Image (cartoon, rainbow, N blue to C red; front, top):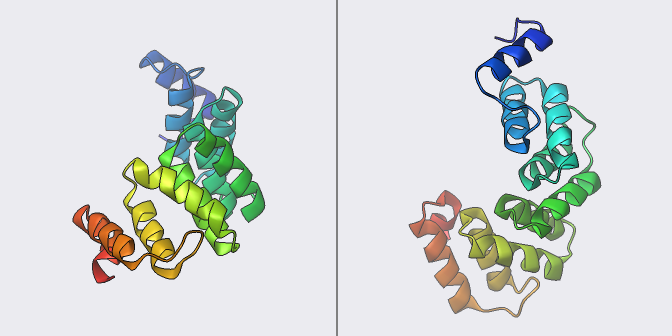
Length: 164
């Protein structure tokens, strides 16, 4: 499919019923390009969706900047995009924002975002939140709460939590 000229490919998508002005379709097309390692095209479609307020596209732009896919790697720009998406309630973006804040030593901010993501069931956020309680990062140290959260994450299949 990627050997088709882009305009022809998009025309075929529209003939199949895709509405490329719809943010869900823009995110899906971005993900398609992402999966095909055409990161520049993925970012182009994520930006279209983000301009229309899609928190999923905003999160995906954050991932692009975090890992340098289609753009130069920039953690601060990634955090800006994750925060935009996180403020709209995207659990994945909340986890990413929390994780970046952890890495920067901004523990209270990390704890805030990890708590929001964990409340939506994100197992990585639950595990990292447990670590915050275990080490007293952004919250008072609370080993029983840490153990409870590690168990919850492990129950949900989080491999790292199973060893804690």
